[in-house]
Length: 194
Image (cartoon, rainbow, N blue to C red; front, side, top):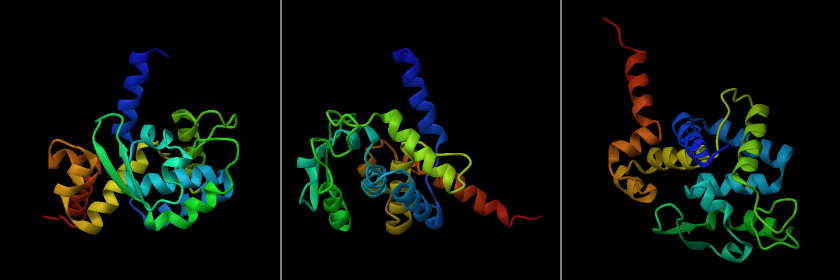
């Protein structure tokens, strides 16, 4: 696949995937990844839904970046902006996982260990878990970032902060990105009758 086609596929995936809006499905995904995929895939998903990083930034993480830390500062690959990621809620699970890694510097190592898993491999594992928990539409790697945004907005109701976190240029872009616009329209139409 050429560079142009790969870039278009990536844009299509970002548009098509939705956040996981059900806490039950979110917990099902965690269970499926941990029990039927691997601890690596579970931790990737856990950080992804709690940090809102792009998968490209997640896969670049090294053990030394996060080991023993409750807070992480990274430079995002796409925007080159500095982000602070809070890991306190994941600290114990993350460090227990790190204790199982040997012979690699990568937080999400491929089987070879000398490099991280690919974006495609992350996508495959997420979809494998999604199939097991009856998410027939599947998910993509961008689902993690959108899920973070959706639940952040639901809890904080602060679109301006979320817009800054996700580095979007306008609040409307952020609302559309996390699927709030569609959800609000759908909710308003549920009981509409003339």
